[in-house]
Length: 167
Image 1 (cartoon, helix red, strand yellow):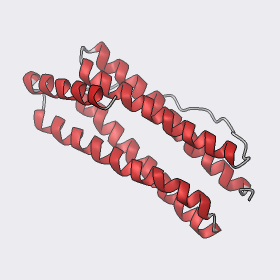
Image 2 (cartoon, one colour; image 1 turned 30 degrees about the vertical axis):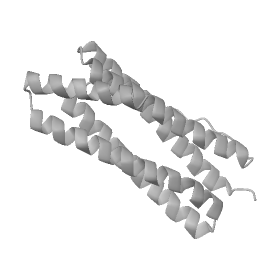
Image 3 (spheres, rainbow, N blue to C red; image 1 turned 45 degrees about the horizontal axis):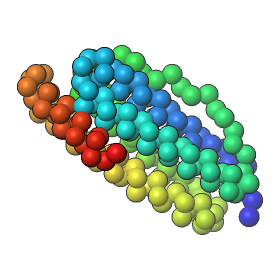
Image 4 (cartoon, rainbow, N blue to C red; image 1 turned 45 degrees about the vertical axis):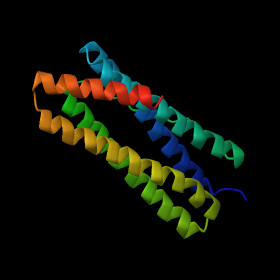
């Protein structure tokens, strides 16, 4: 069954959000690597790769449905951060924004009776729940650490171990 034109546009917009996240997390990784936070850098490199995989999943779904891929401009990522906490707060807020966009899209596909698309989107809904929880955890831990160099070093080491473990 052919997808409605406006739904194809919405799916392409979601793909664009995932590509932006990939790009943004690459910028954040570079910020951390430039500040000698190898662990946080590795964490965001891994997150960037995951976001790229999310975009590719949407791309392949569009192709499977015979729908066109419509490249959209990718917003310029934020490059100026004041602290590790600011990076994670930004990422957490962006993940919340992406979650909301998936919820809105889910409502639309339900209203349209596009049950195959709904089933496809549930993978993203579950993934977003995990992403938000992960970023929220890091925001809480970095808030506790404050500007304590020893605490930040320990968290950086934990982020490195986490990135290596999940690779």
